[in-house]
Length: 127
Image 1: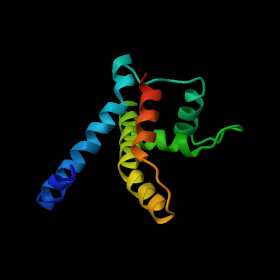
Image 2: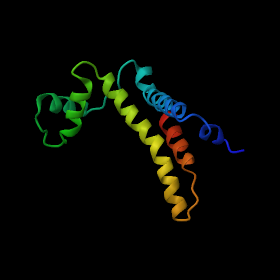
Image 3: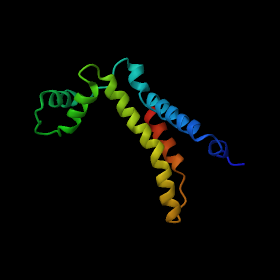
């Protein structure tokens, strides 16, 4: 019996809800370090991006796109919305990419376990 048989035999609505819950849980897990720090992690160039987004000026050495992303996602209220949105985007990608990559490897006759890559990346990030 395949371990995925249980998921495949479930009601499609239940499967969709489970997928959404897993993606949200993954996003919260990716935000763990910021929650542990009690404030989003900042880097030396964070102020430049925030300024470019809120003032609408293009810095000489930075693109304005991420600054605009910060402005619109934060709703000019809190940086936590940006942190969660980034975690959500990465969680969605981590959910979608393994299936596509596995299909590509099968099509080309290669054998590769994508979950090994995800585990190693996760381990490197958190430990």
